[in-house]
Amino acid sequence: MASVALTNLDPASRAAARGWSDLTIRNMFIIPTLVFLIVFNIFPLIYSLGYSFTNFAANRSEPWQFVGLQNYRELLTDDHIWSNFVITAKYVIVSVAGQMIVGFGLALLLNRSFPMKGLITTLLLLPMMMSAAVVGLFWQLLYSPSWGPINYVFGLGDFAWLSNPDSALYAVAITDIWMWSPFVMLLSLAGLSAVPQHLYEAAAIDRAGWWYTFTRITLPLVSPILLIALIFRTMEAFKTFDIAYTMTTQPTAELIAIRLYKQAFQQWDTGKSCALAYIVLIMVLAITNIYVKYLNKVKER
Image (spheres, rainbow, N blue to C red):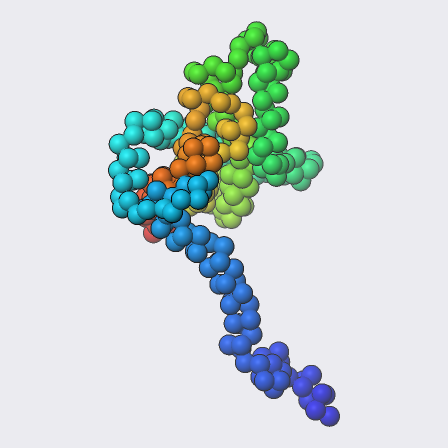
């Protein structure tokens, strides 16, 4: 009889009858997640922050010494580091701008009914599902001056994209655009599908042109989603490593992530590399904060 009575209760009441409160059930899910975040995210973050104030080197057995802000001062006065930041900034602008234009353009083309729309959309999403290292090797073959199809299609002869200092960075940026434009396309499609159709119908009745419809209806309503895509892609572009490291060794394409890798695992200057990582983190947070403030202003309109 007791089991029959329990089955007639709602889940919360049954849990309470067995001795489990809502708070207990909630903690069963939250506490393991918090432990995972603390062990694998917060603790390494604090640990590396401590190392950034020392001369610690992971390949030496000598005890480290506290050097204060010396690592930060040396990095911020190093012309090579600032050169890496300039290269990274150029890469981020070209790559993210290309992704936003291509991704949003594809979303506008796909935001209609046509045969095999689902298959075409799925095929366009494939690049971002691939490993970045595999994408880098794949495009390295495409850029090859000997047998690469890109030079053949555009009639560039034996032009060396990846060994040319003037084109290496842009070649990597084009590869990143190819890989991550589908991400922007996916978010843009979600935003476009949420635009009320009656607004377009009203614009058609008023005989509004396509440019007026795009700038007064489509773009304002989709802009919050586009800003979210811009935030995500800007943060990821600053951290780009796999593609650039796989494709080229040109100094003009040495992004700050590659410089950080060399500092940590080739020069084994662990303390200074931790300091550089925090400088990059602060810059990314500052840029992201600007985007978020603008996003809030857009949402308030």
